[in-house]
Length: 199
Image 1 (cartoon, helix red, strand yellow):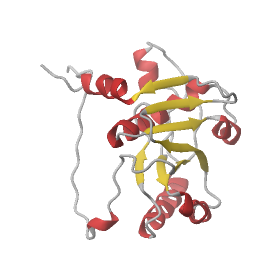
Image 2 (tube, rainbow, N blue to C red):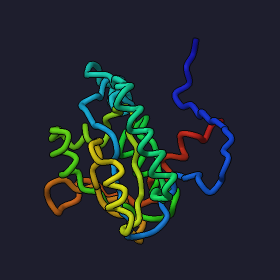
Image 3 (cartoon, rainbow, N blue to C red):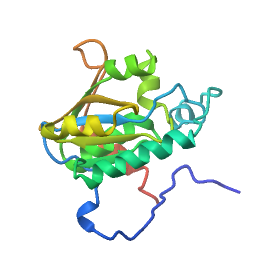
Image 4 (cartoon, rainbow, N blue to C red):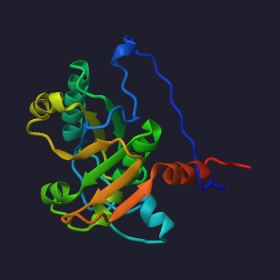
């Protein structure tokens, strides 16, 4: 059996109220970006490890009880119209999800990993950006809704990472003001689209 290096998986579903649908594209500069769910050092089998020919490491494990509670609260937050955009963290982890949200919305994003590092206990920026831990979401929240959102997620892993920016740059910082990563939306989108340019 030959497995292609790139796959495109699509799914369709019905919803009762289209006003409750939330897309992944960023909506407005100044909005806050939160990461919901636990980030762990789970790089085993990750896309990052694959493209760098790395072996070993812990593979992601699903905590079904924690996931169920988190999904319920995300759903409740959406029912209260608190979410402007939302994207799951899957292949590629935080870095890829954030980049996709940015170039899909034609807006920039600036995030700081320091609070995520403190919460997770992970100091390695590569792990924070590319771990593929399960049951995580990146969400965009209006400033006036941040308190309500944080209250809704109280007791669950939730960390504010940064903000949506008008300029179309994706910027990542850690514990200093010097970016450890800065990319333009156009460059990220071109790289992303190359994987779908099948002959």
